[in-house]
Image (cartoon, rainbow, N blue to C red):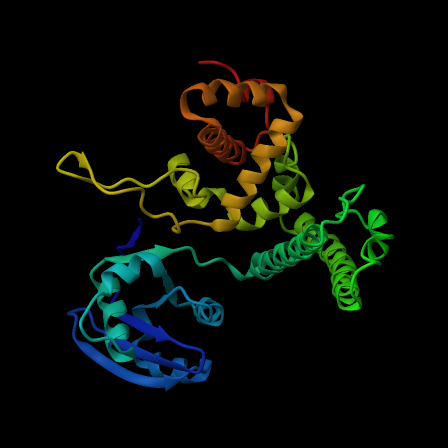
Length: 351
């Protein structure tokens, strides 16, 4: 957990919503000099903070509507801090809660150097990152439709499909597979197939568009990621846009934790208490990408298979794969930090 510990003459906390925002401005001595509810408009914010912007920091909680606020502060030359929503949730406990109190709490956390910081993704690559996340969303919907067709066949005890339906060329006679059933079942399967075909076209178009943008944003990092066995075009794009800048992580441990590749631990008086904590703290997209990359690495590398088999004897196969994923995360961090391609022999070298 990182905290914003810089001091400013004025500190502004904003409880941000889609249509309204509550502002609380503190001076250097911690006194409230402005506390008001305003419409969520850039001009309203600029007019409100105009008397205090000489040395001002603006802080807001990480929620869905923070993009415009970060961009506005950057354009205006104002320091901006994004608070980590999950960490702030524990700090914001209280008997009473409303927008006015929340704005003051954000301001006082920032003023006292206790605001847990989230990464405010810069605008240059942010839109493409969101587009990549949308592509992954479409892929999940496509997988659900394919699974629904398979389950429908199993419901009626039909013969299994001869070929995998994920490939378009294998879906030509799928409707005939349900020809003996009720017309409603046939219509349902046909609707699934048509939606899958449409998603395939959309996903293909998005991948081409994102790949072109990636080569313009950071082609070297993209090609470095492709040197890892198991990381193909899509996983390289996910890693590129979710990591953005590897130098924002001071240590390899910070990066692996951000990727959700290590488990949290609670200790008190030298004793472990409770189960693993912080399961949802970190980047879920990076967790998925490294989990997929490890499985593909095991498919392509005999050394990876031997590593998992060796670890499985002590930890079991599931944990062994997780250990390999954490090892791969550390390797990717060092590879991007040093700007060197992946070396499979060095990766599996015994110490």
